[in-house]
Image (tube, rainbow, N blue to C red; front, side):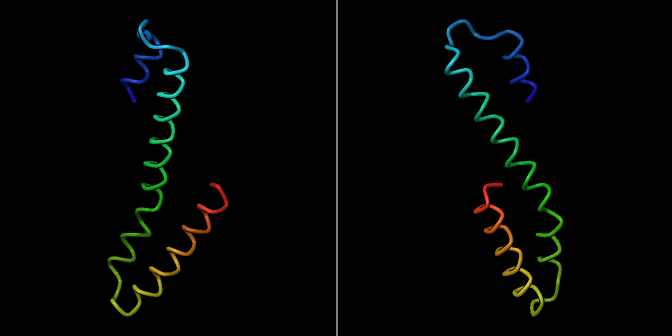
Length: 74
């Protein structure tokens, strides 16, 4: 992220505005995916740390919720 901040302050003259905008969009999307994964990390750890009998239904429920969340365009 620090590299993006530097690029935003001093853009490379050889990069078009369109390409720069695409790079910033891609970086923003990556950051959102990482933040989302970090938010879900406690749930994943909980699933891995539970009893095997309990973990399958819990994993199914978590997967279902994540798929629903993705389908809603979150």
